[in-house]
Amino acid sequence: MAVRRWRIGLLIAGILLLGLGAVVLLQEVNPKHYVGILSWFVGALIIHDGIIAPAVFGVSLAFRRAQHRVPAVVIAIVQGALVVGGIIALIVVPEILKKSIGTLSSSILPQNYALHLVIFYIVLAALTAIAIVIYLRVFASRQKLRSSSDQA
Amino acid sequence: MQRLLYALRQELIAPSRNPRTAVVIGRLLGAAFVICFLTGLYSHFIQDPLPGMHFLTRPVWLYQVTQGVHITTGILCFPLIFAKLYAIYPLLFQTPPVKGFLHLLERASITLFVASSLVEIVIGLLNTYQWYKLFPFPFRQTHYALAFIIIGSLAIHIGVKLPIITRYWRKKDAYDESGEVRELPAPVDPQAHLPLPDVGIGITSRIFAWIDKAPAPRQPRVSRRGFIATVGIGAATVVGLTVGQSARPFDFANVFAPRKAGTGPNALPVNRTASAAKVLESAMSPDWRLTVRSGEVAKSFSRAELEALPQYEVELPIACVEGWSQLASWKGPGVKDLMDAVGANHGSYVRATSLEQGSIYAVTEMEPEFARDDLTLVALEVDGQTLDIDHGYPARLIAPARPGVLQTKWLSKIEAI
Image (cartoon, rainbow over all chains, first blue to last red; front, side, top):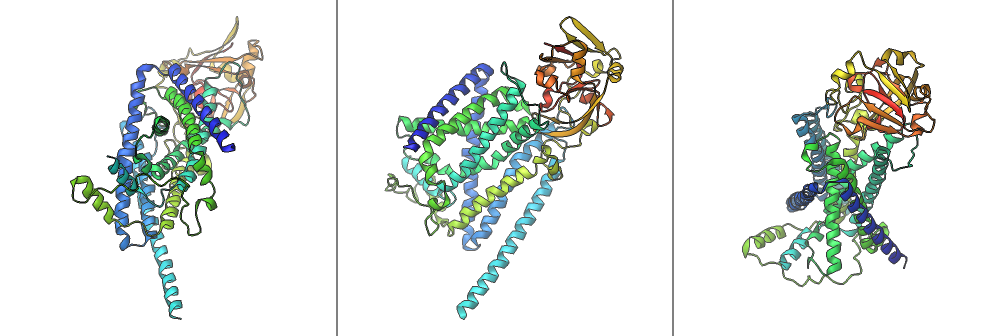
């Protein structure tokens, strides 16, 4: 019963807030810009649902096919590193582009983002490799323990 | 088509894509959205107050913190929103696509929710380095309106999904003894009887056949934990390498934020330069005077005359709407003293006018609580140096707990209203 009341409350609050959003949009944004906003909505959905998500699926599929030969944890570590690298790229690459176009003030985008990104990837690759080596050592020693206890 | 959608959904199933991970990531993302919404509203209303609104002037770092949190949480939303969309991606291919009017509304509201959330965080990020030319719409107004649409859609989404959210809220309820996700007590998937596309007919069938050669993950727990660990590390990485622009203790790790402490003239970042504001001549003119007015009483001060007034030195952050901030030491006469010199009423608002051309921030207004504050100055120096022209030479406002955009530079007039 309580869940039902919460649901109704949330739905009503949501509809009211959506209405408020529509009013704010009408008041603050000239209708001539609505097509622009809508095009960004559609673009965002296409880029995510049509490009990023299938690409992620494709990569994860390739990894799944590799799991005959590679331990699942190693696959998880490499996948994790790729995802972290990808998200950083999504945030940093636009900065590099904008910096190359130029900014109105020298203190906007003052850093050498391209160099930092390269260094970041080197560090990420090194950390990933270290994590895999540590895991394989621990894993191998566990396997040894297991096989020796099996023999005993 | 139905078979294709069903097959797609089946192929996308992965151990990390389950209701429990959707709930775990969803509640973090929901909290992040609410934090961004509230801090965003604060920033909006301190710039555009409704009649009768008043604001806190202490702690002096209040706005620095609310806006730093706004921007940093916005950046944090990137890994979280991608993780959330990853967890629920198979639902995009649910069959039948629409089961009825309510289901259509639900899917439409989710589409609006996802699209507006993605657009909101992307334009927010691009705005922090002023890449306005990419937007075919005004940034601030759109960002503000979308915020209500997102929070409204969030409330509806939580309302619709509440049974799933409560079911999978706690870990021990979500998994059984063997570590498998407990299924919802729901009817069996009505499409489960549909045969998958036959191998050998058409491109789609070949693709599915190729996909099916990929074995299902053998260790679901590794897959799930790896997913959560990746989201955690991704979130820590994006925040850790950017938060230094808003929080000085982390400046050493700031390699990716659009601003860096200590850069710019007077070792302080600049948003709008004197050149962009077209004040290079007017601000350097020997004829420059600051006019102080209350009703019919008006006085004008040269820079030397302002320097001859009692000087105060205050430590205040300059905190930008774009999330960066830096503490500095400011020196100059008090706004309170200047307003007293023209007999202004203690309860009056103060309007500041800049020499700046072509900006909506050329004229700003200040509530009496800021105008009467001991720390609110007409600053002439920063960190022991004369103000650089990019920081507002010959004189600028500085007040506690206000956004940088209201700390009007290149002052020409302050008046009681």
